[in-house]
Length: 387
Image (cartoon, rainbow, N blue to C red):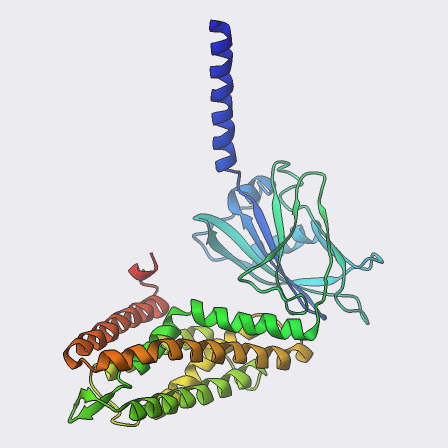
């Protein structure tokens, strides 16, 4: 009996160690594919500790900038361990677009972006990915392969699709593109627009700051007294229409490549727009001309929206459809949120003293959040609101 108990205890102990091992898997690489008809973009994450074991003679120091010599060595290394081929075994041509150090799950990684082109007179359909970097030396290594963007298949970064796991003696992955109908592509991109609004805290705070003073009248240099329901509705219609015109214009121009999208500057300007809108909600800055500031900052927010579409790497033929659908999703979600929030603001504004605290709380919170975003985006200061 004692022998049986000892045996069961040892089994339990062994299972415990196994569960711990499963909970703390070894560092793995990841390949994220962005697909369109004319190219394949590969974003590769390679843990430095694993990469160092595969290339012991190369020094990887994430505390230093990557030098040209390392770029050349790594390009040669990757040329021996990466290939894309059509089903007819025709090779894609590829080149490294960027190489940088970065942190992934609190571990230093080498981040590699690659742009691959199919053979002449062919488009990107089904293809095979051959990859055994690190794995050729570290047989326990794993590489997770996923498609993060494929407009024709309705796949976007928020919900990437896992393709396969590359492991020892399994270094070739088959990638099959399954196109959906244009109406499904339209619907998927419209949903993408809806999700972008719901997940865009900065955009939501900007809308809140525009809405907070809408039910109020201006008395001198302050907000006081409730406007009539007709005046409130007319005010918000003007503001929302102006904002829509502004962001739709720059969204279209930037997505079509007519105006550039300086991503870092745009992110700072979006936060600055919240600061100004919050100050306006605290004390009128623009009198009864809030629509003018709405259209001006709509131009800025449109550039921010456009960065989402330009980041998808769409073909020219897909851009117009994606632009229309994405903007439709944005507008639909904005109108829904305004329809849900505005009646409550009008009702609360009937109690002037109570609504004053609501307005001040919303405006001050938005102002503080926006200032923290500016510090984070401009100077890299840690933002406590982001955990």
